[in-house]
Image (cartoon, rainbow, N blue to C red):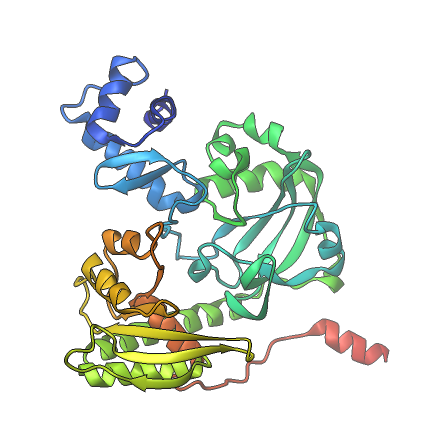
Length: 402
């Protein structure tokens, strides 16, 4: 039995997180794993850590604390995934047939606003997409491509606010059903194929290659007039734009960390104003009880929600601790809402304090989230539109026919 499979068995039986040394000891003493190494716990930690880093939400495991592992739950935080950056990546896009009509999408050839709820920063133009439907006849039904980077929809729907566009290239007939996939050792090793909640799962390179090989004789191309084909020039352009956006995000965060405290408080004021808060005022001064900015969020005249914000201009690694959360909460009037905005991040204890049962919740905005908001709202950056030309033979054919 593989070490990761043995770890899964032991953690399932334990029903709780285990330190890697305790986990290793139980695996060996139960005969599920045999090893000759002097420090088998280090080997196991590396194996499980690699699966977590490579598969993210698709991994069977989570790491709740240092050197401690547990079975992943649907609501566990999703780690970033180490994805292939040398070319188009592969994704499993999962849909519920009761809520999503895949056949209609295939008939149209492409879909705008496909939900991208996980790993949206990693989606790129040209990525391979395998479309999986859950339910009684769960399995793979179509293949295609991602035809945009992730974007925030103008109006969120039941599937969330972050979207990508996709194009279908072929249907799979007969569909590759889950039972057949579970009979292939490599495909069966990919957790989402066995049944896992979620919409977007990055797929390991070896699993994607195996899937391409299995599906090859079943693919029936979607009519070329109704779908978009992979455009290598567009892919390269989107990759460049994505890299440029990340550079600007890094530069903006570094700039914010270099501001003086009153300047950073003014940035928070501009942010709240752009988010349609009213009566926004900077109040930071001695004896302010940790409140730097005050504002009011009005719900169409129905309710006024006073909002108190603490702005923490911290450097990287100097994370906000739970004491800051507690002090802000203690300063809030009964009807007020509290927010802590920082250029760094929050300790695990601070995040726990912010959502503690029975206490007023405190909203948290860390550095990366802050710069994402500022960029979306055009604060601290300039946006420039560039005209891009792409060949459109279908459009030409339509013009000639008319």
